[in-house]
Length: 142
Image (cartoon, rainbow, N blue to C red):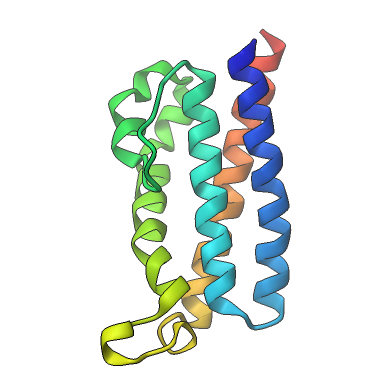
């Protein structure tokens, strides 16, 4: 029951960030939209791992852990495991430049994160949130 409580809390935080990511995207703040989208994905995947009793490392990209324990999830979620892992990896790699840009080349986050980058991130975050919400809803019915 405690795992469910934690998972629901993480999802609540992810939903709030998703709203903010949508707003940032609409405002043209693409680096911030990407960063928030990465946080949505991270929180959702950590909620999912918690739900099935997995202790994850305190890192931003938990794709390897997700795939290692993918057999603990329902078939429909397992089928999305590759997509979820790819999403986690992809957004975690862009997390730092969405914060700081390319400091060595004196490039700002706005110069490095495009509208297309942000759109992809927001769409991936929205899909991840949808899948993880479904997982938790199903778990609550058990």
